[in-house]
Length: 312
Ligand code: ASP
Image 1: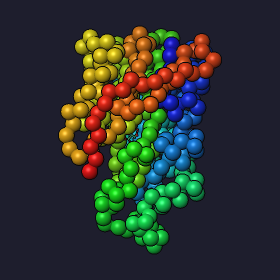
Image 2: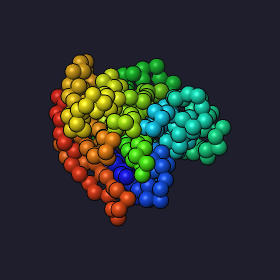
Image 3: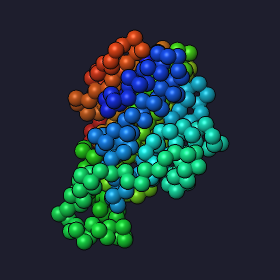
């Protein structure tokens, strides 16, 4: 039994470990752990008070995958609801679908009885959003940003690929050996409205298969979408590679991506035996894990696989 998470999962990892200790399922553990991260206003990359899109609206992406059945559920660009991971789980449990986006996702969240959260931003975060558009826009421009027809230009200007990213990853394996992976994010800050990252895309930012292992990503979602990073890692495990070999291979695959926008990628992974690993293209990144017999989580460095950055 084990829970592995990105370092910003610290606030939720004990709750997830406690569920496993009590004999609960990996799916329940992942959902419980991520909900605490989503509710944390200090984390600007996930859930409540997460950094907004270019219009100042918080749009959440999340997914969950049950490695026992390969069932999964996801929401993208969800507005007005805090616990995107719970809505993703409801998609998995209650619908014949995998992914709902935008108005349909909000409509379904309401139908499932989730409490609405009309204001997702604290005032200081709204100020940070506006400040990021200055000095190129004045107050009147910012007030009318929703009516602009050149958002594509502003998305590129306002985006800082180093500062404005983050996501939470949780992977749990329960006492029956079942694995679940969950991912939740407010996505790329100052993104174009409706942009989905890798977090709600099964195979990109999230994949779990009891028979081989699981992986989840943070970092520049477009890269993980293009390389199917989470699925690639699990597929390499299926092909007989070790966890270290499979992780390294999934990371180096990203070096083959061409084009103008290449930045950071991070992943965490486990194999079917509960061995864990964390990788990053950046120095100094960490991840955490906790087994039910541990009173608190341990933080470990991620192994670095460089991906030459390219921007603009
Ligand atoms: N992967 C997330 C996204 O692209 C952001 C991140 O983890 O930094 O939306």
